[in-house]
Length: 142
Image 1 (spheres, rainbow, N blue to C red):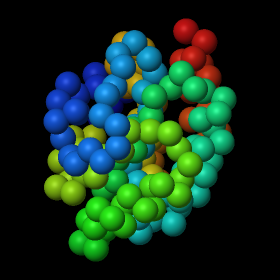
Image 2 (tube, rainbow, N blue to C red; image 1 turned 180 degrees about the vertical axis):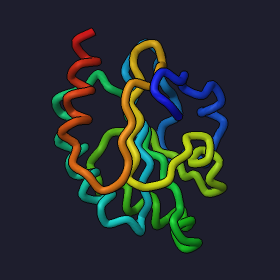
Image 3 (tube, one colour; image 1 turned 90 degrees about the horizontal axis):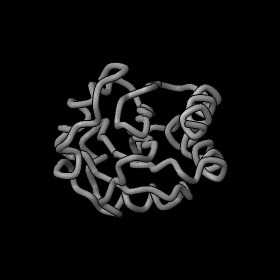
Image 4 (cartoon, rainbow, N blue to C red; image 1 turned 60 degrees about the vertical axis):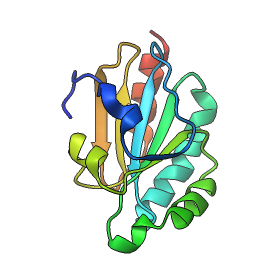
């Protein structure tokens, strides 16, 4: 996805939703791709948990994408995601259709959509969340 692209309309029909399912239009939305076998994803999720306290109006969807075949175990995905302490809807992208739709190459990958469902920021790979925090703050002031 590229900046100013619109949130895919068929998002709610993709993957295996295992927690939550609704997305409220008119609110910022952060989509995070992660994997159980990704150590930097766990670090990013701890940072995201802290960020979430400051930006409660931003919705979050965690999308698990497998890096290896063993990553498709739904129990493993549920257990790991429950450790993150992030309030979010959660999807297991076992067929990688969402990963392909968003063109995810590295995890963790963050996609921040504004109130009009336009992509305003994306970041992927091992990194900290300070730039993401600034972008969310800017959207929250709108």
